[in-house]
Every structure is written in structure tokens, then in C-alpha cells.
Length: 115
Length: 116
Image (cartoon, each protein chain N blue to C red):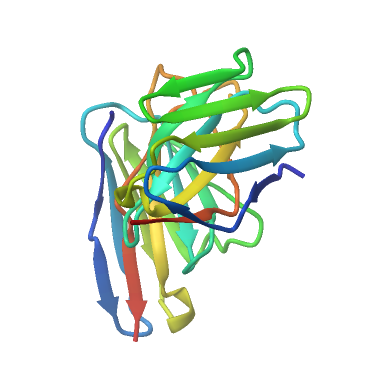
């Protein structure tokens, strides 16, 4: 089974704090790990992604940490802002030959950043 | 980033009618598009993979005669919900993978379908 487990289900962080969301996967064939941000009534938006050949990727306030041996990866949101309040999904996929790319999504984390 | 446009953003239809949802890649070509269904406060559930010029591949448990998918060009895929019933009410989202950029998939804004 291709599964991606995500935690926590919900998270409340104070403005300026660090939000951390964790994901774990089982299939070692996964080779692409994106994070998506979704606001209510909208489609998911690609936030940041990483491949297993690096252990960390940073883009602005968002950082992915990747631990290949533990089959875990996490999203860190530094200096969290109320505008970051949204649902975050981790995902994983295998880059199939022929161009297919089925994303397996985590269960989602509802983040609320309070003033 | 690449833009995926989904239309309509919301639709209300009567039981027994059919509804068509369009998914367009505006500034790139997409050989593969994906259709998802999302229930409130839940994750995205992949319904089918749409391949340009060939039949769609449906996930287990998804009725292919109920959810008709057509991918007629490299920029357009359509999902038709046939003979819709209230239990088909949901948020439907498409995504497209950028040709030549392995891995990255971009999502449409979603379509809220309400069947009354």
C-alpha cells in the first residue's frame, strides 16, 4: 500500500512561532515529496517540494527536512503569520516512466496561527 | 508557477442531470491530468488519471460510467458527472503535470458540485 501518514491533524501556533508538520511514508520507491497549502473552497497550491537526494530545502519561511533512512519528512514554517492559517497536505509520488505521476496525499493538517 | 483553470467554480444541478467540469492548462501542455474528489475536512481522493488521446485510468471503486473523463487535447480535460445524485455532491479538483518537468503538479481552483 502506498500510504503517507501526516501529523498532527490540527495545530495552533502563536504569531511569530514555528509551525511543524510531519509526514512518514512506507514506499521507498517514492522520489518526489511536495507540500501543498489549501485555503477553504480553493484548490491546493504547491508550496515547496524536495527530492530524496537532499536532506533539506528552504524557500523563504518554508523549509522541508527530509530523513531518507527514517522515511520521514517535515514542513517547518518559520515566523508563522495569521495568513498562513490553512490546511497543509504532504504528498509523495513515484515518477513513472511515460510521464505518470500519481500523488499520494497525507490526511492534512489544519493550521491556525493566532495573534 | 503553471496555471490550471477549472470551470465552473461551483454548480448546482437537479438529480438525474449531468454536469460537465472543465480543466485547462493555460500556459503549458499537460499529457496527464488528474481528477480528485474531496469531502469536507478530508484529504484529496484520486478518482482517475486522464491521458491525452487515450482512455482514462480509474481508481478502484470509482465508476467509470458515472464519471466520464475526456482528455481531447494537451490543454483540456473534462469530467462529466452523469445522472447526478445528492451523494455526488462534493468538491472536485483537477491537476495537471507540466510536460518536461517531472514531478510538479498544479491544481485547479476546484468545483463545488451540489446536487439537489
